[in-house]
Length: 230
Image (cartoon, rainbow, N blue to C red; front, top):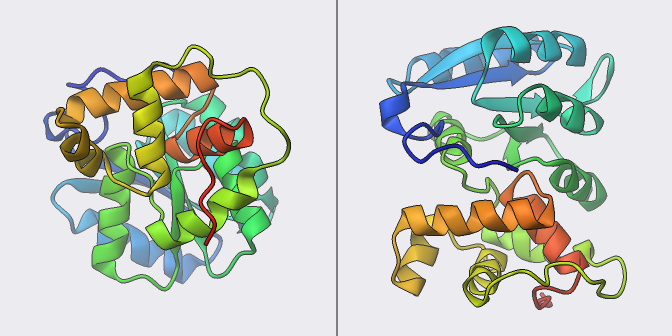
């Protein structure tokens, strides 16, 4: 994965408002989300789609920075469509909208490249905060949910992957596994947030991941971080 330059990332205020594509077949919800986002000075709606096909078309024509994606759509499973949608715009961050979803669906979303999850019952401030976090490269997931999901990433024994990680990159991985934000990791390691972002971009590239959550999934699956039992 090629990281966006620090001065042109979606979460950088110098790059203009964060453009958000809402993909949900419930018209009232999707239109309400669009109105909420447009009311924020630093956010704007790049479009509203009710199907995967419409979403794909809008990804190409509207170039969104963040997609809010329902996992159940009339023409297919939103989670299964994530790789296709990311292939159209790799720098886009996808946050999956959920009412309630079993762990195996959440894990599938992470492994497909989702940046996290947002409950449909969340308030206006939380929706806007989740969009900003995703645009800034943050995982949109609570530490409690992350702790619950991490042990489930493990599928088998360690295999030779990640041997090229530096000691500092391994430190960053361990802190990511604790659910820390970029800012908290920077404080813990006494480095800048920009440095942390670079480490995460390098980790993602070396592990072939599209998001911090997918990076963790791969790292745990290959024994690169210690599983924490809950």
